[in-house]
Structure formats: C-alpha cells, structure tokens
Length: 213
Image 1: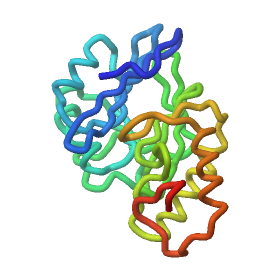
Image 2: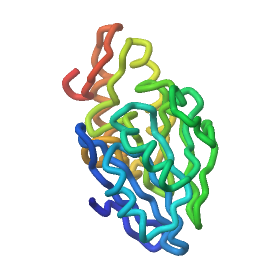
Image 3: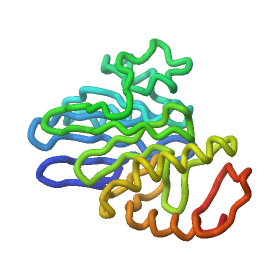
Image 4: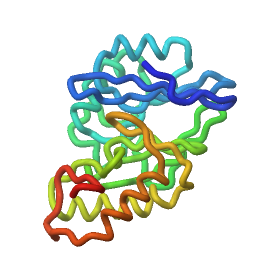
C-alpha cells in the first residue's frame, strides 16, 4: 500500500492488487474517518485490513472489467456496503448495484464531495471521481496515453471524454489511474497536443501512446 495524498482534509491510499497490478483506492475524510473504496481488484482480506481504521460508506466502481472487480463480491458480502456504478457498466453484476451514477452526480462521505464524471470509451460506463485537485481516473487515462479501446469509434469516444471531462480541469490536478503511476492534467495535455498535431489513421484504436502513436 502507498499513501498518495494526505492533507488536512483527505487521505488517499493506493493498493496495487491482482494479476494485472490494478490500483484500488481508499479515500478517507480526515475529520470523520468516513471512507469509500474505489475498485476491488483482488485480495479482499487485504482491502478489509486497510479499511479497518475507517468508517466505509460505499464501494465505487470505475468500470466493470474483471481486473477491477475480482474481490467485489467478497467485499459486498462481508461489508454490506452499497455499490455505485454507471448503469452502462452494470453488466452481470449480481446483485445489481444499489446506486447508479451519472455524469454530474456527487458522492458525499464525511466532509468530502466526490464529483462523478462519465468518461466512456474504455467501457460505455467508465467513470472518474474528482475531489479537490485529485482525480481517480480508472482506465480512462494513464501517463502517456488513453485507456485501451476496442474499436475506432471507442477511441474517438475516449478522446472526447478526456478532452471534455479531464483536460478542462486545472493543470495541477493529480490523476491517479487504474494501473501504474500518477500523472497531471498539465503533463497529459502537453503530450496530447503533440499527438493531435500529427496525422493519424482514421482506424486508430487499441493501445495508443500520445508520443509514439
């Protein structure tokens, strides 16, 4: 586990779990110790251990891919917390999520308000969660490029999501992705500018990097 943010208001802890090294995040209000878990990749016991010193209120899902949901059922059974996802990514989740989020919603816990941003492309129901200058981005954006897409239309969609929902944020906003290390809005806007200045095949999709694709 790694503490990636700790100030007077919020603490954000990252746990890298599962066969793809997926990041789960525990966000905790420093005043009340209320918390939320974002994604549940694997190792429910380890996640439970890290939640013990907090008052967990919700499980939030950035998107419904197996490397982000491996421990979800065990955690739902043991914690009894409401699960919140976008309706387009409910898939075969059973039981269905208690809360269906949409763009512009706010998830509150303690003194923390998480803004919900719908960022389709990697999946139809991909979500990002923002509070203060911190963004939990799931697999929508990573250092150096967008999340993997399955079709040219998906790639067009994820670029629209990134430019419309992420690049409109302040440049010093810290981005905490679903895999790997953090980045900033400023850095990704700069490298995206280099990408968008070059011509590209209209059928581009898949694993794309701003500087080499």
